[in-house]
Length: 194
Image 1: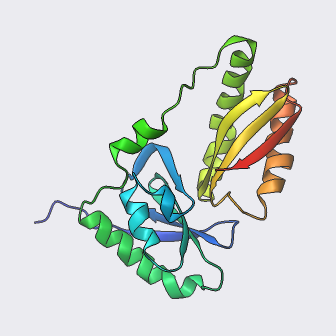
Image 2: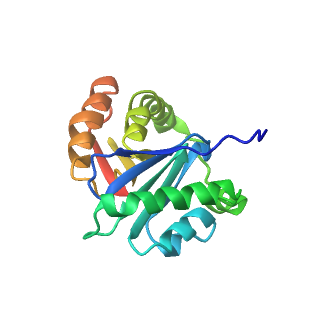
C-alpha cells in the first residue's frame, strides 16, 4: 500500500478576475510567501519559473498551501484550469523544489523596529497579522508591512491583491479605517506594488 497521499488541488476565485487561487492538500511554504511578478523574478523560485513557461501566466504567488496564478488578459480560466492543476500536481508529485534556500538569504532584511516608531510598528504588525492577513490570504494574496513614517503606513500588496480592482477599497475603507481607530498615530495607509 502506498503511504503517499494523492495530491488534491481545488480552485477558489479571488476578487481579482485575473488571479485564481489553487489550493493543495500539501504545505508549500509555511508562514512565508513568495511573489513573482514576472519571469525575471524567479531566480530562486524554481516552481514559479516553471509556471512562467506556460504562455498565459503573468504572475505567481506562493504561500502556505496555495498558489495564486495571475493570467494574461484574453485567456479564459475555464480553458486553462485543468492544465494548471495537472502541472501543479505533477510538479509536487515529482518532489521538485518550490523555493530554494537562497531565496530567503537573498531577501532577508532586518525587521527589528527601534525607538518610538518601533513600538508603533510592532502594534501595527500585530493588528495586520491578527485581523488582515488571514482574510487577505483567503482571497489568494498577502499584504506585507513595509514602513511607518510620519503617520503613514506603507504596505506591499502581493498575489491577487496586486492589481486587484477592489484592493483600494480594502486598503482605505478596511485596513486604514481599522488602524486609525486602534492606533491614533496612524494618519494614512498607502500601498506599494510588491
